[in-house]
Image (cartoon, rainbow, N blue to C red; front, side):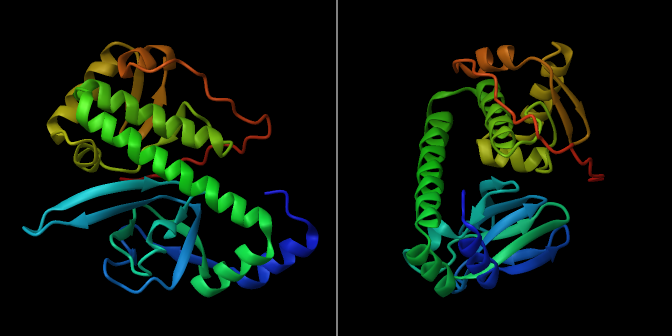
Length: 234
C-alpha cells in the first residue's frame, strides 16, 4: 500500500500474526459479534449462509490478499459462516484497532474503500451471472474471475489450485454438481482447460472469454511473481 516505515510499525503493532486454520476449521460463525477483520495470508476460505430448511448457500470464495469481515461492519455482526478450504493462515486485527488504523493511516482507508468497491462490483457481476447466463457461461465466467484475482496478487493466472469442491462451485453458481463436472469434462475435451483433481490449467483464456461472453483481457502478472505452491487437497 506504499506505507512509510512509521506506518508499517504502527500496522505491525496492531495486527496479530498469525492464526492457522486446518481444512474444515471455522474462522467465524453467523450471528457472532463482529470483533475482528481478517486478511488471508495463504490458503483459501469459503463463506456461506444456512437456509431455513438446513441447506447451505455459498456466498464467496476468498484467496490470499483478500479481507474478510468488511461487509459486516455496519451491523457489527457476522451474517455468514467462514470455513477454511485447506490449511490457511490469516492475520487478525480487532475492529477497534482497525478503526484506529483507518483514522491514522490514510492509505489504509483508501485501500478499504477499494476493497469494498470491488466487493460491490463482484456482487453485481454475480447477479448478472445468475440472471442472464447459462451453465457453461457461468463456469467460464467463474474461472476467469478466479484467474484475474490470482493475477492481481502476482500469482499465475492460468495455473492454480481450485480448492472449492465441484459441489460448492455448483452451489455458488446455481447449477447442479453433475452439470459442473460435465462442463469441466467438455472444456477438457476441447482443450480449453486441463483439470487434475483440483489443480487447474487454463489453456485458452481467449476461448474461455468467448464462452463467458466477455471481452478478452489477458491478466497482467508482475515479473516478480512468486512460484506457485502446489497443495495436495485430496
